[in-house]
Image (cartoon, rainbow, N blue to C red; front, top):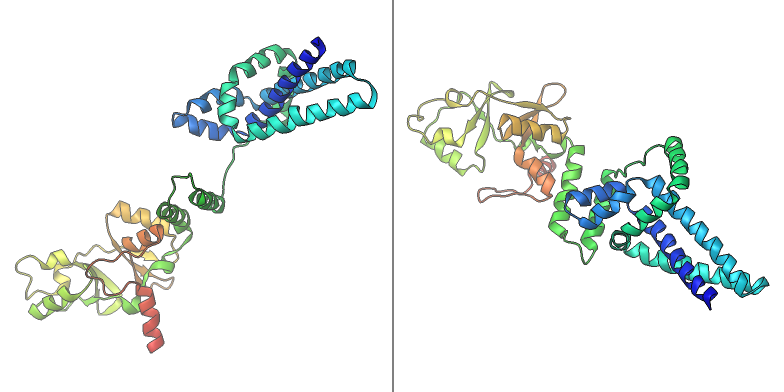
Length: 332
């Protein structure tokens, strides 16, 4: 009777060692630190033992091997020969390996947090044997490598979260996150408004009532100003500059803002976005490698790529200026 009781106790410990080995080692130390920073108490408890990965692994494996060996010995005292081997294998595989690992793989963090006190006790007991082995592993293998995800992997993770019933990531958040991860791979040329549909004013243009009326019908609040040729942009005319008194009779060039920012069509969008923020401007002139004007890019163009949605206001006549430019070329 005593032997049977000992076998049951050993099976319980075998299950604990097996389940804890799979469960705790499957938890990434970096992920646990991230959860700790968000106030997760279970992660904090588990990290206290998981941060020394090789020591934890060595402790649990030593305990598992010792318990299973002892279990086989006691089973041998109950039955002999082939039957003993069959019973020992069946009990260890089913109750000492498969069942606990199936449970711990699903509830690794919560069960691990509850068992931390027991793990620390095992570490203390086996320390004289487990520490030298863990030290050798640390020297031979080095520190655990942090899990680094590529952009494509992060987007796939976001997609999986959005498709999961219990996730708090919705479709709009998925779209915006994916846009934020991909817009830096794009260039100005990919999103700019082509030159063929860019509205521009000649610097010598006189401002009269007819001009003001036509400007009011425009859907733009910032319009480039050129001198002699559209390739020679000398200023930027803002709607606010036409709202003051005394502008009638003047030329466009005389009141236009002379500060103009130029960007190359091959410049990355994230760099241009940062330049927009630092300069506090909303419209840049785009040139190619030959210093020829090829279009304009607005802060709004980059924001649309981030949120993956066209932004239109009540004055916009066309949703996609690039599509309009292609249509004009096709008509020609």
